[in-house]
Length: 229
Length: 229
Image 1 (tube, rainbow over the protein chains, first blue to last red):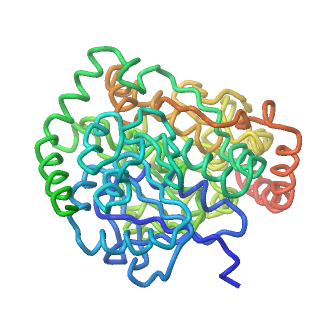
Image 2 (image 1 turned 45 degrees about the vertical axis):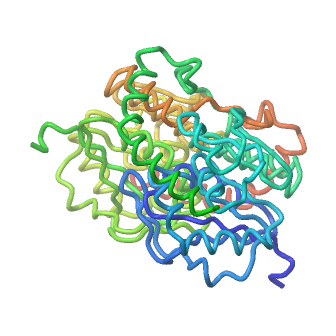
């Protein structure tokens, strides 16, 4: 029975950006003939940004295989890339998967697992310069496909990413039905969603916040890259 | 100390559509000088669509007051509107709030609490025809403001809604910085997010699914409306 279902494993880690995950999860969980497994290295409750806690995640080590592996990002993504147990399970599941996917800085995690060598990949705009540490080629598109690797840009790109994945797996009509059910006809009140379009003052604020965590993230990413060699 | 903070209460209920909630929560939790409280009638773990469970919500009855009350929607929204304890707590918190807000079918819950009488409100496109049961005036805009009531349309409208609320509370620059941090420059792969733009075949699929739950929802909404009189 379960052999016939397409299995998606969503690999969470403490401190993830929850919207990186919850946007795609909403789309994936509405696909027909699908099994979506929310998992983490330790299993159990996983805290995310903004204080939300997801209860009852399954242990990655207990999941036999999947058709699609999905990894969200977060402020702790580079720390997660240093969790050897997490990396081992991602590599194991990746070996049997048809698709390897991520959103936001989740691509740094895929990279640290050695899964993006020579691949083009998306990432959050503020962090995509770190991708070459893992042999990946940064691509500024919102959704990037390179072979069996499908990646999305920062946070909200996850919804566009997931609809593209839904169309790939289940066809355009199904993806469009999910889009209609989610009333996804976005109308942002401002045009500030990309560094190229945001007012200079706004970009300076966000760059200032990011600069404060850049040293830690870069050190963690470099350490993760060292372990790959 | 906490008196100075702007308090947002997010009122969850079992079976909510998690993206109705997680989109706005991401925006709200990034506002400066804010306290975001995730709560529910019973407190504790709250299950949502797609199998996700939010751990550790606070009990609404234990929250003294808030500046902004937010209610998401979901397939169980009209059932939640029949939970007298939930309605009592929403009415109590609403009395001291500067803003009353909702996303998707959360406006049916605000309506059932008697908070939308004579007000224009948004709702998910497939369910907004139920708003007049509660004396509210359906508005097909993605974000609708009528006095101190700010409501968003279906599911993903919550992100546009929350950025509009963020601008109202903290100013446009802050809202734009949050938008940039979330890389919210949406690019849907299809133009199927509204019934007016979706292919006829796609609309027929979604209408078919909705028709199957329409009798239950309508019966629940009518019962909730009866209790208001």
